[in-house]
Image (cartoon, rainbow, N blue to C red; front, side, top):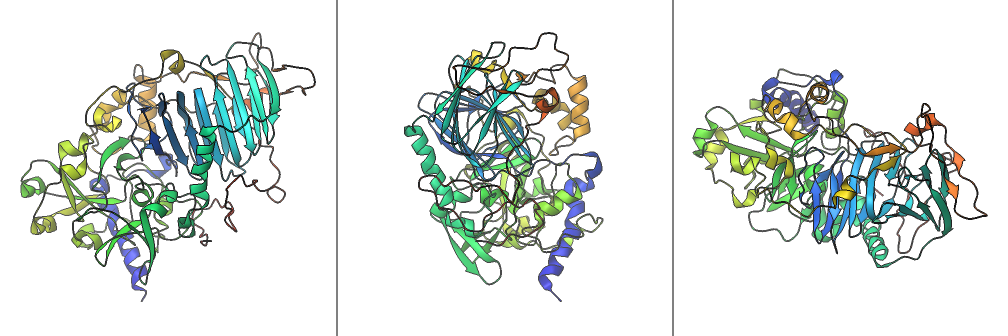
Length: 585
Protein backbone atom coordinates (compact mmCIF):
# COMPACT_ATOMS: atom_id res chain seq x y z
CA UNK A 1 0.00 0.00 0.00
CA UNK A 2 1.16 3.54 -0.70
CA UNK A 3 1.37 4.75 2.91
CA UNK A 4 1.85 8.39 1.99
CA UNK A 5 -1.22 8.46 -0.19
CA UNK A 6 -3.25 6.60 2.43
CA UNK A 7 -2.24 9.04 5.14
CA UNK A 8 -3.22 11.97 2.93
CA UNK A 9 -6.62 10.47 2.24
CA UNK A 10 -7.22 9.67 5.89
CA UNK A 11 -6.31 13.16 7.00
CA UNK A 12 -8.54 14.74 4.39
CA UNK A 13 -11.41 12.63 5.64
CA UNK A 14 -10.63 13.34 9.25
CA UNK A 15 -10.07 17.07 9.54
CA UNK A 16 -13.35 18.35 8.18
CA UNK A 17 -15.60 18.02 11.24
CA UNK A 18 -12.97 19.74 13.41
CA UNK A 19 -13.59 22.97 11.53
CA UNK A 20 -15.48 25.35 13.81
CA UNK A 21 -17.17 22.53 15.67
CA UNK A 22 -18.82 21.14 12.52
CA UNK A 23 -20.23 24.54 11.45
CA UNK A 24 -19.19 24.19 7.82
CA UNK A 25 -19.74 26.70 5.01
CA UNK A 26 -22.22 26.12 2.23
CA UNK A 27 -20.02 26.28 -0.88
CA UNK A 28 -22.70 26.77 -3.56
CA UNK A 29 -23.97 29.94 -1.88
CA UNK A 30 -20.61 31.66 -1.49
CA UNK A 31 -18.00 33.09 -3.78
CA UNK A 32 -14.45 31.86 -3.28
CA UNK A 33 -11.89 34.46 -2.17
CA UNK A 34 -9.04 35.35 -4.53
CA UNK A 35 -6.09 32.99 -4.80
CA UNK A 36 -3.68 35.93 -4.49
CA UNK A 37 -3.13 39.09 -2.44
CA UNK A 38 -0.83 42.09 -2.58
CA UNK A 39 2.11 41.56 -0.24
CA UNK A 40 3.77 44.60 1.31
CA UNK A 41 7.24 43.37 0.41
CA UNK A 42 9.37 46.49 1.02
CA UNK A 43 9.02 49.55 3.25
CA UNK A 44 11.40 52.47 3.68
CA UNK A 45 10.65 55.70 5.53
CA UNK A 46 7.22 56.66 6.80
CA UNK A 47 4.60 54.54 5.02
CA UNK A 48 1.00 54.66 6.25
CA UNK A 49 -1.76 52.12 5.75
CA UNK A 50 -5.55 52.28 5.91
CA UNK A 51 -7.58 49.06 5.71
CA UNK A 52 -10.48 49.20 3.31
CA UNK A 53 -12.99 48.68 6.10
CA UNK A 54 -11.60 51.35 8.47
CA UNK A 55 -11.21 55.14 8.48
CA UNK A 56 -8.02 55.11 10.57
CA UNK A 57 -4.49 55.35 9.22
CA UNK A 58 -1.71 53.44 10.94
CA UNK A 59 1.91 52.48 10.27
CA UNK A 60 2.29 49.98 7.44
CA UNK A 61 3.62 46.52 8.32
CA UNK A 62 5.96 44.39 6.24
CA UNK A 63 4.33 41.20 4.90
CA UNK A 64 0.79 42.50 5.34
CA UNK A 65 -1.56 41.01 2.68
CA UNK A 66 -3.26 43.92 0.91
CA UNK A 67 -6.55 43.39 -0.88
CA UNK A 68 -9.62 45.17 -2.23
CA UNK A 69 -10.13 48.60 -0.63
CA UNK A 70 -6.75 48.93 1.15
CA UNK A 71 -4.78 52.18 0.84
CA UNK A 72 -1.13 53.24 1.23
CA UNK A 73 0.53 56.62 1.58
CA UNK A 74 4.29 57.15 1.25
CA UNK A 75 5.48 60.29 3.01
CA UNK A 76 8.60 62.36 2.28
CA UNK A 77 11.61 60.15 1.44
CA UNK A 78 9.53 56.98 1.75
CA UNK A 79 9.22 54.05 -0.65
CA UNK A 80 7.06 50.95 -0.76
CA UNK A 81 6.75 47.81 -2.85
CA UNK A 82 3.70 45.58 -3.29
CA UNK A 83 3.91 42.22 -5.06
CA UNK A 84 0.86 40.57 -6.61
CA UNK A 85 1.67 37.18 -8.06
CA UNK A 86 4.41 37.77 -10.62
CA UNK A 87 3.83 41.55 -10.79
CA UNK A 88 5.36 44.31 -8.65
CA UNK A 89 4.05 47.80 -7.85
CA UNK A 90 6.55 50.31 -6.45
CA UNK A 91 5.72 53.68 -4.94
CA UNK A 92 7.91 56.78 -4.83
CA UNK A 93 7.61 59.38 -2.02
CA UNK A 94 4.38 61.37 -1.66
CA UNK A 95 2.28 58.73 -3.42
CA UNK A 96 -1.34 57.81 -2.66
CA UNK A 97 -2.15 54.24 -3.74
CA UNK A 98 -5.10 51.92 -3.24
CA UNK A 99 -6.64 48.69 -4.52
CA UNK A 100 -10.01 49.17 -6.19
CA UNK A 101 -10.17 45.50 -7.19
CA UNK A 102 -7.91 42.50 -6.68
CA UNK A 103 -8.95 39.00 -7.67
CA UNK A 104 -7.73 36.15 -9.86
CA UNK A 105 -8.37 38.03 -13.11
CA UNK A 106 -8.29 41.70 -12.20
CA UNK A 107 -5.83 44.08 -10.60
CA UNK A 108 -7.25 47.60 -10.49
CA UNK A 109 -5.39 50.25 -8.53
CA UNK A 110 -5.96 53.88 -7.70
CA UNK A 111 -3.13 56.43 -7.97
CA UNK A 112 -4.43 59.81 -6.78
CA UNK A 113 -0.96 61.37 -6.53
CA UNK A 114 2.68 60.42 -6.88
CA UNK A 115 4.70 57.96 -8.93
CA UNK A 116 4.12 54.25 -9.53
CA UNK A 117 6.45 51.79 -11.23
CA UNK A 118 4.89 48.51 -12.40
CA UNK A 119 6.71 45.38 -13.54
CA UNK A 120 4.38 42.84 -15.15
CA UNK A 121 6.04 39.50 -15.79
CA UNK A 122 3.00 37.62 -17.08
CA UNK A 123 -0.38 38.99 -18.14
CA UNK A 124 -2.79 36.28 -19.25
CA UNK A 125 -5.35 36.65 -22.02
CA UNK A 126 -8.20 36.73 -19.50
CA UNK A 127 -6.48 39.09 -17.05
CA UNK A 128 -6.82 42.84 -16.66
CA UNK A 129 -4.44 45.33 -15.04
CA UNK A 130 -5.67 48.91 -14.73
CA UNK A 131 -4.21 52.01 -13.06
CA UNK A 132 -6.79 54.72 -12.46
CA UNK A 133 -5.75 58.36 -12.12
CA UNK A 134 -7.59 61.70 -11.92
CA UNK A 135 -6.85 62.33 -15.62
CA UNK A 136 -7.55 58.93 -17.13
CA UNK A 137 -7.60 55.16 -16.80
CA UNK A 138 -4.39 53.38 -17.83
CA UNK A 139 -4.81 49.79 -19.05
CA UNK A 140 -1.64 47.69 -19.29
CA UNK A 141 -2.04 45.45 -22.32
CA UNK A 142 1.08 43.29 -22.16
CA UNK A 143 3.83 42.17 -19.84
CA UNK A 144 6.46 44.86 -19.47
CA UNK A 145 7.74 47.77 -17.38
CA UNK A 146 5.62 50.88 -16.86
CA UNK A 147 5.70 54.16 -14.97
CA UNK A 148 2.71 56.36 -14.09
CA UNK A 149 3.04 59.84 -12.52
CA UNK A 150 0.28 62.07 -11.13
CA UNK A 151 1.14 65.63 -10.09
CA UNK A 152 0.12 67.15 -6.76
CA UNK A 153 -2.88 68.96 -8.27
CA UNK A 154 -4.24 65.81 -9.90
CA UNK A 155 -4.56 67.64 -13.23
CA UNK A 156 -1.66 65.99 -15.08
CA UNK A 157 -0.88 62.31 -15.56
CA UNK A 158 2.10 60.93 -17.46
CA UNK A 159 2.39 57.32 -18.63
CA UNK A 160 5.77 55.91 -19.63
CA UNK A 161 6.12 52.52 -21.31
CA UNK A 162 9.64 51.09 -21.05
CA UNK A 163 8.56 47.70 -22.39
CA UNK A 164 5.05 46.54 -23.20
CA UNK A 165 2.02 48.52 -24.36
CA UNK A 166 -0.59 50.62 -22.57
CA UNK A 167 -3.86 52.33 -23.40
CA UNK A 168 -5.13 55.55 -21.82
CA UNK A 169 -8.89 56.18 -21.69
CA UNK A 170 -10.72 59.37 -20.69
CA UNK A 171 -13.86 61.21 -21.77
CA UNK A 172 -15.06 58.36 -23.95
CA UNK A 173 -11.92 58.05 -26.10
CA UNK A 174 -8.60 56.26 -25.91
CA UNK A 175 -5.09 56.18 -27.38
CA UNK A 176 -2.19 53.74 -27.24
CA UNK A 177 1.24 54.25 -25.70
CA UNK A 178 3.97 52.14 -27.29
CA UNK A 179 7.39 51.05 -25.97
CA UNK A 180 9.85 53.88 -25.25
CA UNK A 181 7.09 56.49 -25.25
CA UNK A 182 5.74 58.86 -22.62
CA UNK A 183 2.17 60.12 -22.85
CA UNK A 184 0.95 63.17 -20.95
CA UNK A 185 -2.73 63.82 -20.23
CA UNK A 186 -3.69 67.26 -18.91
CA UNK A 187 -7.15 67.85 -17.48
CA UNK A 188 -8.71 66.20 -14.48
CA UNK A 189 -12.25 65.09 -13.74
CA UNK A 190 -14.75 67.45 -15.41
CA UNK A 191 -12.12 69.22 -17.53
CA UNK A 192 -11.50 69.04 -21.26
CA UNK A 193 -8.50 66.70 -21.43
CA UNK A 194 -5.64 67.07 -23.89
CA UNK A 195 -2.88 64.57 -24.54
CA UNK A 196 0.60 64.44 -26.00
CA UNK A 197 2.92 61.52 -26.83
CA UNK A 198 6.70 61.92 -26.99
CA UNK A 199 9.90 59.93 -26.56
CA UNK A 200 10.15 58.31 -23.15
CA UNK A 201 11.56 60.37 -20.32
CA UNK A 202 14.97 59.32 -19.02
CA UNK A 203 15.17 56.94 -16.09
CA UNK A 204 15.92 58.60 -12.75
CA UNK A 205 17.39 57.27 -9.50
CA UNK A 206 14.07 55.92 -8.30
CA UNK A 207 13.50 53.92 -11.51
CA UNK A 208 17.04 52.57 -11.28
CA UNK A 209 16.19 51.35 -7.78
CA UNK A 210 13.06 49.70 -9.18
CA UNK A 211 15.17 47.96 -11.83
CA UNK A 212 17.49 46.63 -9.12
CA UNK A 213 14.47 45.17 -7.33
CA UNK A 214 13.44 43.50 -10.60
CA UNK A 215 16.83 41.84 -10.89
CA UNK A 216 16.29 40.15 -7.53
CA UNK A 217 13.22 38.49 -9.07
CA UNK A 218 14.89 37.56 -12.33
CA UNK A 219 18.02 36.08 -10.77
CA UNK A 220 16.36 34.26 -7.86
CA UNK A 221 17.52 30.64 -7.70
CA UNK A 222 14.41 29.76 -5.70
CA UNK A 223 12.38 29.92 -8.92
CA UNK A 224 13.82 26.45 -9.64
CA UNK A 225 11.81 25.08 -6.72
CA UNK A 226 8.61 27.16 -6.62
CA UNK A 227 6.32 28.89 -9.07
CA UNK A 228 7.07 32.56 -9.71
CA UNK A 229 3.48 33.17 -8.63
CA UNK A 230 4.42 32.17 -5.07
CA UNK A 231 4.43 35.63 -3.55
CA UNK A 232 7.73 36.34 -1.79
CA UNK A 233 9.91 33.68 -3.45
CA UNK A 234 12.54 36.31 -4.33
CA UNK A 235 13.41 36.80 -0.63
CA UNK A 236 14.33 33.16 0.00
CA UNK A 237 17.77 33.16 -1.67
CA UNK A 238 19.35 35.69 0.70
CA UNK A 239 17.84 34.24 3.85
CA UNK A 240 18.10 30.46 3.61
CA UNK A 241 19.35 27.41 1.76
CA UNK A 242 17.69 24.73 -0.36
CA UNK A 243 18.41 21.12 0.52
CA UNK A 244 17.32 17.81 -0.97
CA UNK A 245 15.69 15.32 1.38
CA UNK A 246 14.68 11.73 0.59
CA UNK A 247 11.22 12.09 2.12
CA UNK A 248 10.14 15.61 1.13
CA UNK A 249 12.27 16.49 -1.88
CA UNK A 250 13.60 20.05 -1.96
CA UNK A 251 13.16 21.93 1.33
CA UNK A 252 14.21 25.43 2.35
CA UNK A 253 15.98 26.04 5.68
CA UNK A 254 16.14 29.60 7.09
CA UNK A 255 19.47 31.06 8.17
CA UNK A 256 20.24 33.18 11.20
CA UNK A 257 17.25 32.27 13.35
CA UNK A 258 17.41 32.43 17.14
CA UNK A 259 17.73 29.34 19.32
CA UNK A 260 14.35 27.73 19.84
CA UNK A 261 12.90 29.36 16.74
CA UNK A 262 9.67 27.83 15.45
CA UNK A 263 7.32 28.72 12.57
CA UNK A 264 4.39 31.03 13.35
CA UNK A 265 5.99 32.39 16.53
CA UNK A 266 7.83 35.55 15.49
CA UNK A 267 5.09 37.85 14.27
CA UNK A 268 1.48 38.65 15.13
CA UNK A 269 -2.09 37.85 14.15
CA UNK A 270 -4.43 40.22 12.29
CA UNK A 271 -8.00 40.05 11.04
CA UNK A 272 -8.03 40.38 7.24
CA UNK A 273 -11.28 39.98 5.33
CA UNK A 274 -12.37 37.76 3.62
CA UNK A 275 -9.89 35.25 5.11
CA UNK A 276 -10.20 36.09 8.79
CA UNK A 277 -7.32 35.41 11.19
CA UNK A 278 -4.08 35.91 9.27
CA UNK A 279 -0.45 35.46 10.30
CA UNK A 280 1.87 38.46 9.73
CA UNK A 281 5.49 37.37 10.11
CA UNK A 282 8.28 39.69 11.22
CA UNK A 283 11.03 38.28 9.02
CA UNK A 284 11.84 40.03 5.71
CA UNK A 285 11.50 36.60 4.07
CA UNK A 286 8.39 35.74 6.07
CA UNK A 287 5.66 35.58 3.45
CA UNK A 288 6.00 32.59 1.13
CA UNK A 289 6.84 30.04 3.89
CA UNK A 290 3.81 31.05 5.97
CA UNK A 291 1.12 31.28 3.28
CA UNK A 292 2.13 28.39 1.01
CA UNK A 293 3.53 24.90 1.60
CA UNK A 294 4.11 23.19 4.95
CA UNK A 295 6.75 23.04 7.69
CA UNK A 296 8.51 19.96 9.08
CA UNK A 297 11.14 19.37 11.74
CA UNK A 298 14.08 17.51 10.17
CA UNK A 299 17.46 16.87 11.75
CA UNK A 300 18.00 19.65 14.27
CA UNK A 301 15.70 22.31 12.94
CA UNK A 302 12.72 23.42 10.91
CA UNK A 303 12.47 23.27 7.13
CA UNK A 304 9.84 24.64 4.76
CA UNK A 305 8.41 22.19 2.23
CA UNK A 306 6.96 24.06 -0.78
CA UNK A 307 5.50 20.92 -2.34
CA UNK A 308 4.70 20.43 -5.99
CA UNK A 309 5.12 23.32 -8.42
CA UNK A 310 1.81 24.52 -9.84
CA UNK A 311 1.11 27.45 -12.11
CA UNK A 312 -1.14 29.44 -9.77
CA UNK A 313 -0.65 28.42 -6.13
CA UNK A 314 -3.42 29.50 -3.76
CA UNK A 315 -2.64 31.89 -0.92
CA UNK A 316 -3.75 30.86 2.59
CA UNK A 317 -3.89 33.16 5.65
CA UNK A 318 -2.03 30.72 7.94
CA UNK A 319 -1.37 27.01 7.47
CA UNK A 320 -1.73 25.96 11.09
CA UNK A 321 -4.03 23.91 13.30
CA UNK A 322 -5.40 25.30 16.56
CA UNK A 323 -5.65 23.25 19.73
CA UNK A 324 -7.85 23.58 22.79
CA UNK A 325 -10.96 21.74 23.86
CA UNK A 326 -12.85 21.28 27.10
CA UNK A 327 -10.99 22.53 30.20
CA UNK A 328 -8.09 23.73 28.05
CA UNK A 329 -7.97 27.20 29.65
CA UNK A 330 -8.03 25.64 33.11
CA UNK A 331 -5.25 23.24 32.15
CA UNK A 332 -2.84 25.98 31.08
CA UNK A 333 -3.76 28.17 34.04
CA UNK A 334 -3.98 31.53 32.23
CA UNK A 335 -7.67 31.95 31.61
CA UNK A 336 -8.51 32.14 27.93
CA UNK A 337 -5.57 31.01 25.84
CA UNK A 338 -4.97 30.44 22.12
CA UNK A 339 -2.60 27.75 20.83
CA UNK A 340 -1.51 26.50 17.41
CA UNK A 341 1.15 24.52 15.54
CA UNK A 342 2.26 24.40 11.87
CA UNK A 343 0.79 21.81 9.55
CA UNK A 344 3.15 19.23 8.03
CA UNK A 345 3.18 17.74 4.51
CA UNK A 346 0.13 15.57 3.74
CA UNK A 347 -1.88 17.35 6.46
CA UNK A 348 -4.64 19.31 4.73
CA UNK A 349 -5.84 22.78 5.55
CA UNK A 350 -9.57 23.47 5.69
CA UNK A 351 -10.42 27.20 5.68
CA UNK A 352 -12.64 28.84 8.27
CA UNK A 353 -13.81 31.29 5.62
CA UNK A 354 -16.54 30.38 3.15
CA UNK A 355 -15.25 28.39 0.16
CA UNK A 356 -16.19 25.73 -2.36
CA UNK A 357 -14.82 22.18 -2.46
CA UNK A 358 -12.82 23.12 -5.55
CA UNK A 359 -11.10 25.89 -3.60
CA UNK A 360 -10.21 23.50 -0.78
CA UNK A 361 -8.67 21.06 -3.24
CA UNK A 362 -6.66 23.83 -4.92
CA UNK A 363 -5.34 25.29 -1.67
CA UNK A 364 -4.10 21.81 -0.67
CA UNK A 365 -2.97 20.40 -4.00
CA UNK A 366 0.71 21.32 -3.61
CA UNK A 367 1.20 19.47 -0.33
CA UNK A 368 -1.47 16.76 -0.09
CA UNK A 369 -1.22 13.72 -2.33
CA UNK A 370 -4.90 12.82 -2.53
CA UNK A 371 -7.50 15.61 -2.63
CA UNK A 372 -10.36 13.70 -4.22
CA UNK A 373 -12.30 13.08 -0.98
CA UNK A 374 -12.10 16.61 0.36
CA UNK A 375 -15.87 16.93 0.88
CA UNK A 376 -16.39 13.78 2.98
CA UNK A 377 -17.49 14.46 6.57
CA UNK A 378 -18.28 12.87 9.92
CA UNK A 379 -14.89 11.34 10.79
CA UNK A 380 -13.37 11.89 14.25
CA UNK A 381 -10.33 14.15 13.97
CA UNK A 382 -9.08 13.33 17.47
CA UNK A 383 -7.74 9.98 16.27
CA UNK A 384 -5.20 11.66 13.98
CA UNK A 385 -1.63 12.20 15.11
CA UNK A 386 -0.25 15.39 13.58
CA UNK A 387 3.42 15.13 12.79
CA UNK A 388 4.56 18.52 14.09
CA UNK A 389 2.66 18.42 17.35
CA UNK A 390 5.46 16.65 19.15
CA UNK A 391 8.30 18.61 17.52
CA UNK A 392 10.42 20.92 19.71
CA UNK A 393 8.64 24.24 20.40
CA UNK A 394 6.06 23.48 17.71
CA UNK A 395 3.01 24.46 19.77
CA UNK A 396 2.79 28.17 20.52
CA UNK A 397 0.49 29.37 23.31
CA UNK A 398 -0.47 32.99 24.06
CA UNK A 399 -3.19 34.76 25.97
CA UNK A 400 -6.45 35.80 24.35
CA UNK A 401 -5.40 39.45 24.73
CA UNK A 402 -2.08 38.96 22.93
CA UNK A 403 -3.83 37.22 20.07
CA UNK A 404 -6.75 39.59 19.52
CA UNK A 405 -4.73 42.81 20.01
CA UNK A 406 -2.11 41.85 17.39
CA UNK A 407 0.67 41.86 19.97
CA UNK A 408 4.09 40.33 19.14
CA UNK A 409 3.71 36.63 19.82
CA UNK A 410 7.32 35.80 20.71
CA UNK A 411 7.30 38.30 23.60
CA UNK A 412 4.23 36.74 25.19
CA UNK A 413 4.61 32.97 24.72
CA UNK A 414 3.17 30.95 27.60
CA UNK A 415 5.25 27.93 28.56
CA UNK A 416 2.98 24.92 28.98
CA UNK A 417 4.19 21.49 30.18
CA UNK A 418 4.31 18.83 27.48
CA UNK A 419 1.77 16.58 29.22
CA UNK A 420 -0.81 19.37 29.21
CA UNK A 421 -0.18 20.14 25.55
CA UNK A 422 -0.72 16.48 24.77
CA UNK A 423 -4.13 16.62 26.46
CA UNK A 424 -5.39 19.38 24.16
CA UNK A 425 -7.48 18.55 21.10
CA UNK A 426 -7.23 19.92 17.58
CA UNK A 427 -10.25 22.23 17.30
CA UNK A 428 -9.91 23.54 13.74
CA UNK A 429 -7.96 25.83 11.46
CA UNK A 430 -8.95 29.21 12.87
CA UNK A 431 -9.07 30.55 16.40
CA UNK A 432 -12.57 30.92 17.77
CA UNK A 433 -11.86 34.51 18.71
CA UNK A 434 -13.91 37.58 17.77
CA UNK A 435 -11.78 40.34 16.15
CA UNK A 436 -11.56 43.89 17.46
CA UNK A 437 -10.57 47.20 15.91
CA UNK A 438 -6.96 46.49 16.90
CA UNK A 439 -7.12 43.14 15.09
CA UNK A 440 -8.12 44.89 11.85
CA UNK A 441 -5.47 47.61 12.11
CA UNK A 442 -2.90 44.89 12.99
CA UNK A 443 -1.45 47.11 15.71
CA UNK A 444 -1.57 46.59 19.49
CA UNK A 445 -1.67 50.36 20.09
CA UNK A 446 -3.82 52.63 17.95
CA UNK A 447 -1.46 55.45 17.01
CA UNK A 448 -2.45 57.80 14.21
CA UNK A 449 0.11 57.69 11.42
CA UNK A 450 0.83 60.35 8.84
CA UNK A 451 -1.99 60.51 6.37
CA UNK A 452 -2.28 61.99 2.88
CA UNK A 453 -3.82 65.46 2.48
CA UNK A 454 -7.61 65.44 2.38
CA UNK A 455 -7.58 66.88 -1.13
CA UNK A 456 -5.78 63.69 -2.20
CA UNK A 457 -7.94 61.18 -0.33
CA UNK A 458 -11.16 62.75 -1.68
CA UNK A 459 -9.90 63.08 -5.25
CA UNK A 460 -11.90 61.17 -7.86
CA UNK A 461 -10.13 58.91 -10.32
CA UNK A 462 -11.32 57.87 -13.77
CA UNK A 463 -12.02 54.15 -14.24
CA UNK A 464 -12.38 52.03 -17.36
CA UNK A 465 -13.64 49.01 -15.41
CA UNK A 466 -16.31 49.64 -12.79
CA UNK A 467 -14.84 48.34 -9.52
CA UNK A 468 -16.64 46.20 -6.99
CA UNK A 469 -18.36 47.96 -4.08
CA UNK A 470 -16.12 49.17 -1.28
CA UNK A 471 -15.78 46.80 1.69
CA UNK A 472 -18.46 47.03 4.37
CA UNK A 473 -16.92 48.96 7.31
CA UNK A 474 -15.77 46.87 10.25
CA UNK A 475 -18.03 48.85 12.59
CA UNK A 476 -21.04 47.60 10.62
CA UNK A 477 -19.82 43.98 10.77
CA UNK A 478 -18.44 43.79 14.29
CA UNK A 479 -21.60 42.77 16.11
CA UNK A 480 -22.51 40.10 13.54
CA UNK A 481 -18.98 38.68 13.67
CA UNK A 482 -19.32 38.13 17.41
CA UNK A 483 -22.09 35.59 16.73
CA UNK A 484 -19.61 33.25 14.97
CA UNK A 485 -16.22 33.85 16.62
CA UNK A 486 -13.29 33.41 14.27
CA UNK A 487 -15.34 33.00 11.12
CA UNK A 488 -15.71 35.74 8.46
CA UNK A 489 -19.17 36.64 7.20
CA UNK A 490 -20.50 34.96 4.08
CA UNK A 491 -21.39 36.97 0.99
CA UNK A 492 -25.14 36.88 1.68
CA UNK A 493 -24.73 38.33 5.18
CA UNK A 494 -22.33 40.95 3.90
CA UNK A 495 -24.80 41.97 1.20
CA UNK A 496 -27.56 42.28 3.79
CA UNK A 497 -25.39 44.54 5.94
CA UNK A 498 -24.44 46.62 2.92
CA UNK A 499 -28.05 47.29 2.00
CA UNK A 500 -29.55 47.64 5.48
CA UNK A 501 -26.94 49.29 7.69
CA UNK A 502 -26.35 53.06 7.75
CA UNK A 503 -22.94 54.09 6.37
CA UNK A 504 -22.25 50.49 5.25
CA UNK A 505 -21.82 51.41 1.59
CA UNK A 506 -19.01 54.00 1.35
CA UNK A 507 -18.54 55.92 -1.90
CA UNK A 508 -15.74 54.77 -4.18
CA UNK A 509 -14.67 58.22 -5.52
CA UNK A 510 -14.53 57.04 -9.12
CA UNK A 511 -15.93 58.33 -12.40
CA UNK A 512 -16.33 56.24 -15.58
CA UNK A 513 -13.90 56.90 -18.40
CA UNK A 514 -16.68 56.16 -20.87
CA UNK A 515 -19.83 58.22 -20.16
CA UNK A 516 -23.15 56.49 -19.74
CA UNK A 517 -25.31 56.53 -22.90
CA UNK A 518 -28.03 58.41 -21.06
CA UNK A 519 -25.76 61.34 -20.22
CA UNK A 520 -27.48 64.54 -21.34
CA UNK A 521 -24.27 66.34 -22.20
CA UNK A 522 -21.29 64.05 -22.74
CA UNK A 523 -17.94 65.53 -21.72
CA UNK A 524 -15.54 66.67 -24.43
CA UNK A 525 -13.33 63.88 -25.73
CA UNK A 526 -9.57 63.60 -25.58
CA UNK A 527 -7.93 66.06 -27.97
CA UNK A 528 -4.35 66.11 -29.26
CA UNK A 529 -2.24 68.82 -27.66
CA UNK A 530 -0.38 69.53 -30.91
CA UNK A 531 -0.60 68.91 -34.61
CA UNK A 532 0.69 65.64 -36.00
CA UNK A 533 -0.70 63.42 -33.26
CA UNK A 534 -3.21 60.78 -34.35
CA UNK A 535 -6.68 61.42 -32.92
CA UNK A 536 -7.87 59.35 -30.01
CA UNK A 537 -10.34 56.65 -30.98
CA UNK A 538 -13.88 56.68 -29.64
CA UNK A 539 -14.73 53.99 -27.11
CA UNK A 540 -18.32 52.69 -27.22
CA UNK A 541 -20.21 52.91 -23.92
CA UNK A 542 -20.58 49.13 -23.68
CA UNK A 543 -16.79 48.81 -23.52
CA UNK A 544 -16.58 50.98 -20.45
CA UNK A 545 -17.00 48.11 -18.02
CA UNK A 546 -14.13 46.01 -19.29
CA UNK A 547 -10.86 46.85 -20.97
CA UNK A 548 -10.53 45.58 -24.52
CA UNK A 549 -7.38 43.50 -24.74
CA UNK A 550 -5.81 44.07 -28.13
CA UNK A 551 -2.74 41.93 -27.63
CA UNK A 552 -1.78 39.37 -30.30
CA UNK A 553 -3.03 35.81 -30.20
CA UNK A 554 -1.11 33.50 -27.93
CA UNK A 555 0.76 31.88 -30.81
CA UNK A 556 1.74 35.25 -32.27
CA UNK A 557 2.47 37.24 -29.11
CA UNK A 558 5.98 38.58 -28.90
CA UNK A 559 7.84 37.91 -25.66
CA UNK A 560 8.59 40.70 -23.26
CA UNK A 561 11.81 42.47 -24.20
CA UNK A 562 14.45 41.92 -21.53
CA UNK A 563 15.45 45.14 -19.87
CA UNK A 564 18.88 45.98 -18.57
CA UNK A 565 20.23 43.34 -16.22
CA UNK A 566 17.35 40.95 -16.80
CA UNK A 567 17.92 37.20 -16.71
CA UNK A 568 15.22 35.30 -18.59
CA UNK A 569 14.37 31.87 -17.21
CA UNK A 570 13.89 29.21 -19.85
CA UNK A 571 10.59 27.56 -20.67
CA UNK A 572 8.56 29.96 -18.51
CA UNK A 573 5.00 30.20 -19.68
CA UNK A 574 1.60 31.05 -18.29
CA UNK A 575 -0.58 28.22 -17.01
CA UNK A 576 -3.86 28.89 -15.35
CA UNK A 577 -5.07 25.49 -14.10
CA UNK A 578 -3.79 25.15 -10.54
CA UNK A 579 -4.40 21.41 -10.58
CA UNK A 580 -1.77 20.88 -13.29
CA UNK A 581 1.84 20.51 -12.31
CA UNK A 582 4.52 22.65 -13.85
CA UNK A 583 8.04 21.27 -13.74
CA UNK A 584 10.73 23.44 -12.16
CA UNK A 585 13.09 25.03 -14.63
